[in-house]
Image (cartoon, rainbow, N blue to C red):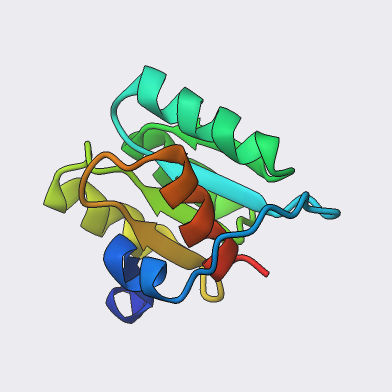
Length: 120
């Protein structure tokens, strides 16, 4: 098991360090959104795409398979995941990838601020 617990950053912690700004990304950082709500996840990916991020969403089962084959800079764990699902996904995250664990629904601007803080 990876040392994933040390890499999980809670949304409140990430938000303390983020300054509001809008910068269109020039490179496509790959972000994987993992959860159980298709509509919520697809809207999060659309929000991330407005800032130039290359985001895709998957279910927890799909995440475990995808993380074996693909590299992502950031994994966003949706609040729709159970604790067990989140732990299982974290165990599959390769070394070097960051994890953002969302505890509740958040505004799109809050999501973008947190992502900017973690993906440089």
